[in-house]
Length: 112
Length: 110
Image (cartoon, rainbow over all chains, first blue to last red; front, side, top):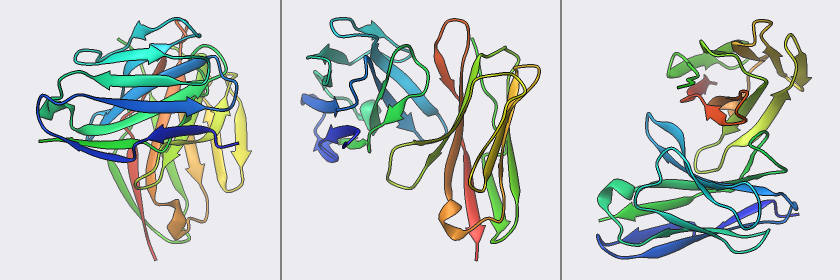
């Protein structure tokens, strides 16, 4: 099992460009999550999907959209990137609810 | 809102020493988790605690779910260089929301 995989690993964008971060899990988990990690801020929840077909806002959803494509895949889209979105983005999954989440390796995004 | 407090932000220890980290809150939680993040990687689950008072070990790591349900600690015994990283506590409450502490960066001097 690969667990949680994320692509790309690194990305540089110019302000105003758009991109989609991909996440997939092979653990048959129901719930999936997107976090961003910034120095001194810890992990902050952007969006989550409790089950296939549902998505909900987390703590910092502004500037992002998500799609739960199927049970395995959960993507995060930046429609018009801003320098404030420079961060490390982590995808996570759990069996159900929000306990015991398993994380992917992260995507490092730089917006110039 | 619910907050988890981890301090200090950084800890420096000598190889072979034991180290203890606390995570405290003014709120009650039902589950406590401890994660470690290596540089350039995602957080990895170390220990999960599901019952107040529970004491669980994983190799050189020991963690306890506080009896008041408002705190947890993680002990690392006989530290080694590969213990360096960021240690996060996380907890879920009645609303099932997972809250994270801001993490403690551990450095181990050889």
